[in-house]
Amino acid sequence: MGRVALVTGGTRGIGEAICVALQGAGYRVVANYGGNDAAAQEFSARTGVPAYKFDVSDFDAVAAGITQIEREVGAVEVLVNNAGITRDSTMHKMSYQQWEQVIHTNLTSCFNTCRAVIDGMRERGFGRIVNIGSINGQAGQYGQVNYAAAKSGIHGFTKALAQEGAAKGITVNAIAPGYVDTDMVRAVPPQVLEKIIARIPVGRLGKPEDIARTVLFLVADEAGFITGSTVSVNGGQHMY
Ligand code: NDP
Image 1 (cartoon, helix red, strand yellow):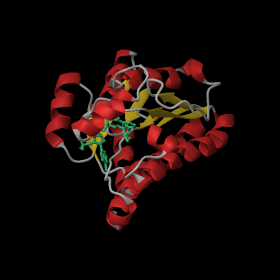
Image 2 (spheres, protein in one colour):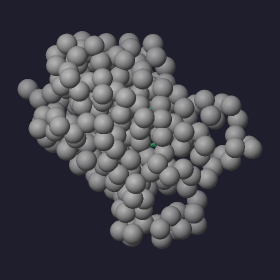
Image 3 (cartoon, helix red, strand yellow):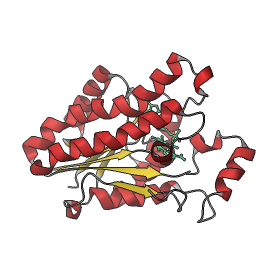
Image 4 (cartoon, helix red, strand yellow):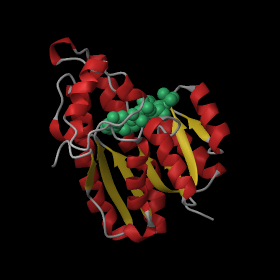
């Protein structure tokens, strides 16, 4: 049987493509989501991938959710921290709540999930963790102090945990997507999006599948020598 892979925010957008790619490669995939039950039900019915609802920003909810997954499906050997949100605003208008929500959902979530799986991965001597960062964590972005800080934090988190996991067969890598055609990017005003696409040398938005294939590469058993890396998948928009 294939390894158990948990993808947070796996029911829509990039996470959905990651689930489908992992499933196609023989992993036993489990998706998590936060609140959109209709999308999760539709996703599970279509793909056969079970979806577990818990808020990744809530430490206790994550611990309970992962305990349930491990009981019902099996020990999590592959973890993809993909769930994320934006709450954009310039600094002078940003509320503490907008800051806090984005930091906790995008960054604290990685602590919450990794803390729940790390002991098992260490005991078994194998683990693959991929954290989804962002081009805007590398380059910054107007109106995204909260999001850029959280995503930049993910890149540091990845390098530190990679050092801890290396001797235990656990690799930890990050992917920094550029602009990818999902609901998150569809929320950007069309005139702004047009300007963004004009700055992408490849000449198009990314597809969720562009990110999914990178995840597959990083989580392979054969990828044990790749750890602490951030792979940019951005159509050449930012060469870091
Ligand atoms: P979407 O908005 O399309 O999907 C987000 C997913 O995350 C949904 O499944 C959602 O669940 C889930 N989610 C959100 N909040 C929580 C929560 N608190 N607990 C559990 N699950 C939650 O996002 P994308 O697919 O566009 O983005 C995926 C990741 O890629 C994010 O981390 C994002 O920051 C990153 N990224 C995206 C880029 C892009 O251009 N799209 C560019 C760079 C990075 P539900 O359906 O229940 O809301």
